[in-house]
Amino acid sequence: MMKGIKRLLSIIVTIILTLVLAYNVYNMVCVKVMGQDLATINGYGVLEVVSGSMEPTIHVGDMIIIDTHDKNYQEDDIITFYDKQGSFVTHRIIKIDGEKMVTKGDNNDSEDDETDMDKIVGKYVTKLNWVGRILSAFKSPLTLVMILIVGILICVFVSTDENGNPVMTPEEAEFEEFKKYKKEQERSLEDKPKATKTKKTTSSSSPKKKSVASSTTKKTSSKKATTKKKSK
Image 1 (cartoon, rainbow, N blue to C red):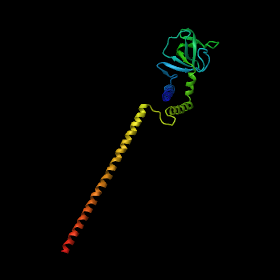
Image 2: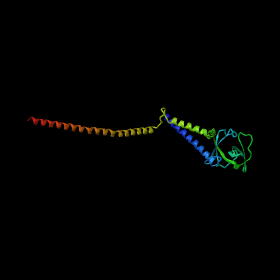
Image 3: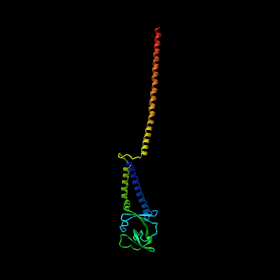
Image 4: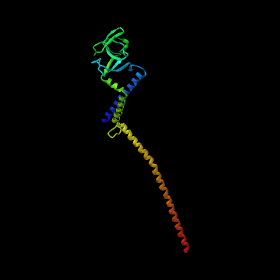
């Protein structure tokens, strides 16, 4: 059970870190390299809310998703547009007059200045509470390094047991046992030829002793025969 939980945590951490890294790289390429004001995927972009002008509908720290392909704008739509300084503003349309529009923040007392409709970047789709703060933190290089270090430590923790050995599935453990068995067999096969050589050396030395012994016996017998002849 514990092994399954650790493996699941490892997968979740890996997925989160991969997505964060991919988002930051993609955002940097779109904004810094390609010169775009907003990184989009299939026409959808994400923005962090940094003011409370649209509360209680949208709060500071929320992440909003806007559709840059939807050009059907009506009164009461929440849209993101460029203000006179070229910054992104997300307010509600309260009046449309031909190619002009008037917007207002839900939490503001006064209306915005009249703006051209072609200044609209996209229409509000939905929001993710507090995710904007998280994404903003991820843009810091120091935060990314800290997240990477923590992620590595978590992966190491969830992938090892109490003794520091890698956590393995039953199939992996069986495969490791099979590899150990194969290594033991190879070692035993390497030791067998040495034992055979020792046997041959021992057996080859014994016939020489026998031949020496038999030759000695023959010489003794011949001496006895010579003695007999002299006594006659």
